[in-house]
Image 1 (cartoon, one colour):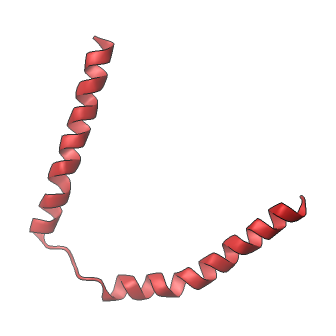
Image 2 (cartoon, helix red, strand yellow):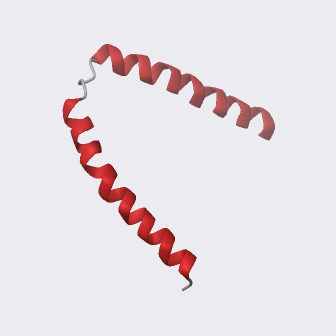
Amino acid sequence: MNWVTIGSALLMVAMLVFIFPRMRQAMKDSPKGTSEDWKSFFIPLAAVIGFVVFLIVMVRG
């Protein structure tokens, strides 16, 4: 274990210590998603997954 590894581990721990309270506050104060929001998320996601499956089928066939 060298000093670079120890230093990067200490920086990661410090980053988690500083980010965690802000993340918890952001999660508490964020608006909740409605069903319309979830639809607008899943429709493009399904389109991308379908396109990737289509590309895989085209390459294999």
